[in-house]
Image (tube, rainbow, N blue to C red):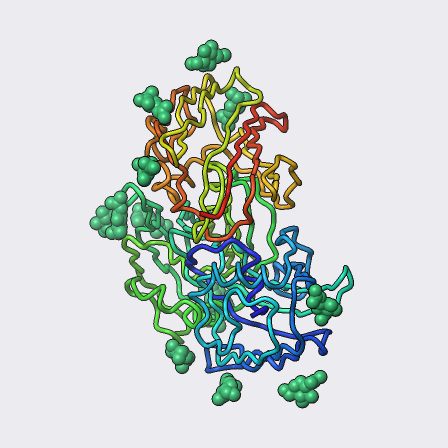
Length: 505
Ligand SMILES: *[C@@H]1O[C@H](CO)[C@@H](O)[C@H](O)[C@H]1NC(C)=O
Ligand SMILES: *[C@@H]1O[C@H](CO)[C@@H](O)[C@H](O)[C@H]1NC(C)=O
Ligand SMILES: *[C@@H]1O[C@H](CO)[C@@H](O)[C@H](O)[C@H]1NC(C)=O
Ligand SMILES: *[C@@H]1O[C@H](CO)[C@@H](O)[C@H](O)[C@H]1NC(C)=O
Ligand SMILES: *[C@@H]1O[C@H](CO)[C@@H](O)[C@H](O)[C@H]1NC(C)=O
Ligand SMILES: *[C@@H]1O[C@H](CO)[C@@H](O)[C@H](O)[C@H]1NC(C)=O
Ligand SMILES: *[C@@H]1O[C@H](CO)[C@@H](O)[C@H](O)[C@H]1NC(C)=O
Ligand SMILES: *[C@@H]1O[C@H](CO)[C@@H](O)[C@H](O)[C@H]1NC(C)=O
Ligand SMILES: *[C@@H]1O[C@H](CO)[C@@H](O)[C@H](O)[C@H]1NC(C)=O
Ligand SMILES: *[C@@H]1O[C@H](CO)[C@@H](O)[C@H](O)[C@H]1NC(C)=O
Ligand SMILES: *[C@@H]1O[C@H](CO)[C@@H](O)[C@H](O)[C@H]1NC(C)=O
Ligand SMILES: *[C@@H]1O[C@H](CO)[C@@H](O)[C@H](O)[C@H]1NC(C)=O
């Protein structure tokens, strides 16, 4: 059962656009408590599975506490950084119960698990047969890379068992729910005696842009022409680029094309009159590109959100003869957490979430928020009130958060070690629209998606229940307090406090 810890570790929501695979599973110590023969096996060319048995050697009682440590290697090179998210430490029976509550649908291919509620857990042998990683159980905000989780069992504060699970997260399909990639610009900067491009980025409809136009090969392109690339990234999307070490290998133009065909064939087959794969030299021709949508699937997983600029440079005898510049934008919907924070907090299966309090603590000259929690009927609380802004709000305003948890619900809060990057205000609003439009019911007069800057306005919230549907099915119960902080030029200008109660229903 324990090998699922990593999924319990994180908030689970539906996953789009990722492939998640087991990479390794090792028991590092504690063979007198468990004896694991679980191994990651290649199942077929494209899939790996977890296979083997986990023997529980001794009864596991409430004295055995399970804790976790999480590490991330963003480049997938095993250089792990400690990741500050932690699950609350729980005793083994509690751990197992919450696992059952949240993940029972992912238990196929697992045989002879202890019964739900069994405590102490009696010695047994659990068989896991060709278990594919249950990617659906993993939150969509989990960044790509390698993830390492240590599951530690301790008895009276002494570590007795440690498991290590390594999981690889790849972005494969990029969907609207995870990441959206759009062309931003395509320009030929020089070399019109070799190429003549009229390719332009056009608005196709309200939500899509396409690349449209022609690319003329003016002169024959032979092996003397070397093609290299340079990548730049602007993480805030403000055109302040940093050089990025990604590169296509420098090759002569024919090789470059073959390579391109190999990797991206399916993404160029809607371009008309492309040279044949292998054609060398490439003869003069007119290539037509009609309403081409950015082939988001072609984007490898290191493309972080923001603006990306790629320079494609043709060199003849060490002299640059042509340069193209492609700019595209990668948008992500940041974290579900944002919504969790913006609206309160978490899960579903067996838990009820209610607004508890909301308060504005500062910044009345910028926003005046009269939202209050009201009793709607005997069992339900709602939010009611007006949020008025008095200034023009733009992406210079950053939203950040600070989270606290009171497990006993007695207002003794601990700082929760999860920190989220600050997000520019308009982007935050767009993210709400893109990902959480269903949470926006009963909120009236919100600026439409894409509005930026946001002029002064009044937003009305009427009888808004906690949008639990939007919430992933795992969060410790108790009181959760979130400060939502607006900063402008690194100065805090507005602070709100939200409090939400999570309890078993
Ligand atoms: C663990 O199981 C393996 C076979 O799966 C067995 O060879 C080994 O002796 C067992 N270890 C202990 C401590 O029982
Ligand atoms: C997994 O284990 C089962 C049962 O021991 C075995 O039949 C199957 O071939 C194993 N799968 C792999 C990929 O090794
Ligand atoms: C690998 O196995 C899975 C599950 O049986 C199957 O869906 C997939 O198509 C297989 N892949 C290959 C390349 O055979
Ligand atoms: C719980 O299990 C541990 C380790 O097996 C044992 O030392 C302890 O006495 C047990 N406690 C209870 C209350 O049974
Ligand atoms: C490039 O193509 C445009 C039309 O697409 C044309 O007007 C222009 O003269 C061409 N430039 C050269 C150098 O061929
Ligand atoms: C793209 O080009 C085609 C053919 O030139 C044209 O019919 C179409 O309207 C263009 N699309 C846009 C969005 O400009
Ligand atoms: C834009 O066009 C695409 C492709 O035809 C379509 O899937 C999408 O729904 C359109 N969006 C709008 C807002 O019309
Ligand atoms: C390759 O193309 C360049 C530029 O058009 C030309 O100067 C050179 O002579 C060509 N080389 C060969 C071997 O054809
Ligand atoms: C904020 O709104 C409340 C209620 O609408 C009002 O009484 C109060 O004067 C407003 N505060 C400011 C600073 O405008
Ligand atoms: C919320 O506000 C609306 C409109 O002001 C009012 O009709 C409704 O009764 C209020 N709800 C509660 C629970 O106070
Ligand atoms: C309270 O209102 C909610 C929403 O309309 C409803 O689902 C729930 O059954 C009501 N509870 C009671 C006790 O009336
Ligand atoms: C955003 O608004 C702030 C405060 O009104 C202003 O100082 C800043 O220049 C604006 N930024 C942009 C990019 O318009």
